[in-house]
Image (cartoon, rainbow, N blue to C red; front, top):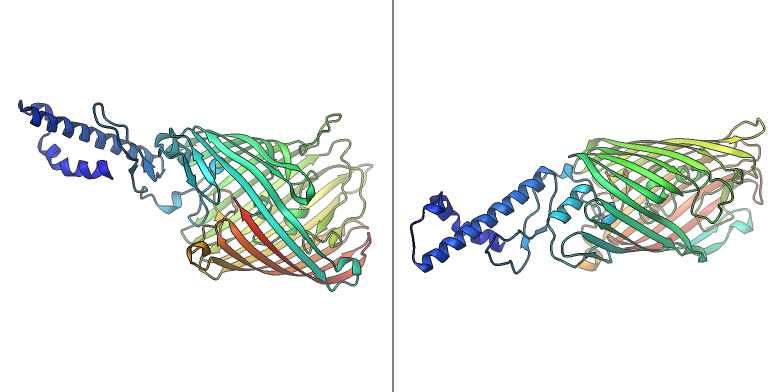
Length: 501
């Protein structure tokens, strides 16, 4: 606060001399003093104007470099300015979340970074550095995700289901960044399951209609905004696998598609609309399938230690002429046991699907609860009736260490937590107990099965980007087709170590 302290020391002199131009002729030494006072007063006025602009836009900045007044000596270090005393409810992401990367920032933070460059070239965020140009225009950050799982199932009456497997749930490398206030981008490739797959890959533009009403538009290979856990990244889900609502009530193309997604954000919620074709592929001989998907969430109650979450979503897709297979085999007791699924039986001749769902939940202090339900109608050709899928789930969690759930009120999903006492700083980390019940029903088809699973788990977050997870699952399936038919039940014990950069 060099400029601030010097300015305060001369404030009385400035107030006592309302018109410095009226100071009488002075000796050379006195003239130097008058010039210095005038320069410092100009610097203080410029700094105050910048703070006023930031507070008017709801922004907060940690470091600023005021523009030197003409004739003043340049600053030797960035001026440190305290964060604006804005009410916490105006912050677009919860304080218990790790700060968002360049591609996930809101326009207020982008404007603050542009107008008040820190002069830093690098800073360390969640595990990897964020690179900044000195003028604040360019931002770049490497991204990574390593999720390693082990799973063991037992108790089934089928020996083929009682297996132990290992796998990489995610093994991603990527990058994200921005140019100026509005333009941003992100790209990630996944190498899990010994295959290379392009996942998130988009460019975007963000701006605001007015203070408190922002928007962005993304174009490229986009992750679905669909349901609470369906919109949560695989590195942020409270369980090792998403709920049956997220995995079964889904477009035929899956979680990703190439297209465009405009999103609108206000203080208590957001809405999005996505129009896409198929996933990235090399097939250009026939038209893509077309999927239109919309979601909105609202926080009618939103405070420092509690949120009420309401959400609704839906999609409609028209399948291409070569994408008529609607067969579903959905995981029910963990991702890495391919024999442990609820199946629909072979189903071809699909022309399109329509799905929709609702979300209700929230958190109070360290306790969170979320309920989801969804339905999917798959349209069949030749006058056949729709194939109807139904799923629902109820999940809860409690942080024994007092940390708040990593709920992101901007997106209506879970994110990376900001742990109060990380283990790498001598603390216990964050310890969370979880429980979930989920149900899946394909019995609308003669060949369709049904199943349910009850899960209890514990998550240990060492810091904001490292975690250990253990899930114990009691499952039941009743398939009418496939290799494992009839009523069957058993248990699965799964564990994960995850690192997200």
